[in-house]
Image (tube, rainbow, N blue to C red; front, side, top):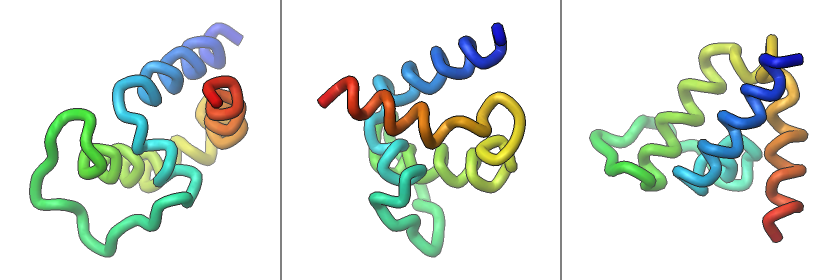
Length: 80
């Protein structure tokens, strides 16, 4: 239970730091075929790297991150 709360906290922080990450994780933005050559903090390009890492690592499908999609949607609804 403590790990789930920690994951929720991490996800909320990530959304505040880079608002574009959720767009890629929720398939609202299409991932490019290639990763960008560079990125700036808080940019769309940084979000692409973050989403690629999460989706490719399996973190999004297992363990405490398995509920990431519903947490993202819930957080978006609260912030509308």
